[in-house]
Image (tube, rainbow, N blue to C red; front, side):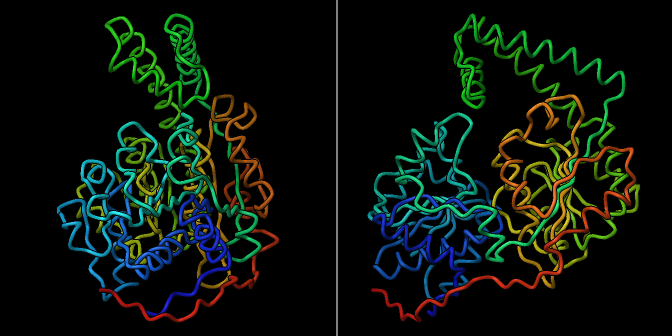
Length: 456
């Protein structure tokens, strides 16, 4: 079958992966086209007479890969191991598997010497998920917006397995090449009520006290934060009674404080101020931290006249597919989701993103922005609004999102701070401006040689 056209960065990444012995991690900003790169790596694998496994963190992303593989390789058997599908690995050329099944199935025995493509490869460093990284795969490709993990397991598990990062493609390069669309970011401060502020300070003191106990009495590592949280969870599940109580006490107050930040009514006021921006958007996505917050935000948007629906893990699969179908067909304007859209799932034509509960993880913030950075019809650019509670751990003035903001300040058309004393029209006007707006930059592509692929 004729190969697809690739962006120049995809060709360079593919060449780097081949030069490294068909092993390595490719980091590319969300929206730049990592799946297309993976398909081309799969083509290389099939042409060599090998077979391929693609592992994914969730079912929706698995279906997306399955559809892409069937379109790219219609003459080959593409199987699925996930949901209600249980393809036999020995009877297919390419198998897409959710990680929960991949780690409990001897895929490498059936695909001995083949290629393992790990989408969102940072997910596979955990004690459980690393079981999917079988040694029987000679070729290995990890894909991620950023493979680093807060617990440091990217250094001890992910990088050694895949062979390190062979290619990086950041925001600046993607924008210069016209691979993603230009964007503006508004950082919007909201304020707790007096009662919420008092509750936040109370919970923060409890969090700090419980953390110090875990550090000083039980010897948990202070940094990185991901390693600390991992140790807390291990202590709660595997420690003795006193250790489990101490770990549970910390997690309880930590989660209560996080919920307070995520569900404060002040952020609903912020959404109301953004109503003109919703009206100017072709389609929008709102990211929350919890299902409860997503439901409250959706109700608020509907009250404001925005056509919005939730998308979260408590919905059944058919309801989730219906929401995405309506969104793709432009029959739904706004999706409100906790974390389901963070990784991998293609979101068509969204040009406005609102982050109601910001993550402390740089990767998650990059992934959320990437949902709106894919190239769009016409010359539209993307717009983002990040709501945060002033004077809390969400506040950039206190160091929140420092690494993420370092990533975007240069590439963005503009990043500006607002509060709710500014009018919604003023914020919307800023979001709609930008030096790159109206640009007609075309993506840099390269044609691959046409190939005829035959298989025994």
